[in-house]
Image (cartoon, rainbow, N blue to C red):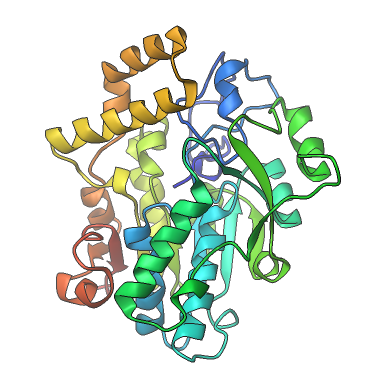
Length: 363
């Protein structure tokens, strides 16, 4: 999922490696929508927020039917948290899908029953999102078009009427700044932090006001959430996707203590959603994922010989392949169990197996 909000602030409770700026300290292609250019520059001491990968409807095979699963399991409503929200594409995507399913099935608006809060460590990412702006990829991948394709395929699978309405075009509109391609709030937030506010192949978009206002924006981290003393624990849906592969080596006990505390914040029946990178992958599958990531890298940088050199180094890097690890034992230790196949099938099929976990009853 995201990286910036889940690297805890350094504290005595959870000693982590201090975040250090380094030349070309990246390793991802899209850095919360605001930093492919970080590959081309040195990070300044102010730009110490870790880079990350994110995009609209990431892993749609989970994100789309997750809206139906949430409504079915929590008809009375439930708070939803997106931890490590980055540019807030994840909470916005989920809210939009919830809204579309409301209309498709003739249900009343559900935003009041399913409040969504995005938690992000970077103050400038929170400021930009709260103002209602996001930078989306135009090439080589049309990010908005890919999200629309996934939405319409899902609508077709559900056999809902008015499938053409299943689109994000109305809620993510190209920014028209009267001659400026960058919103003022983005330039003001990013430039002092050493981040280029406009990157090649991307374009800024304005978020629909109703969608923007339907999400709560919080500056915080996974550690801050885990350290809260929520008594009694509350039922929640927590999105914590593709997070631990990036931080497990920076946390004491590989993050197990931190994940145990997350479990203590959640009442039995709560859902925890993890990502593709959190699920153990066999050697062939891992090789495929690595090759796909490297090809995306080369698509961005074309025939640049330096890019090919970097790609070759990444392909043989143990650190890169170790991003894919098995979080299952850690989740079980923290009091979660995978949602049973028969509970997943009506909504998510087999693609989400191992990615939706439920908090167990306390013995």
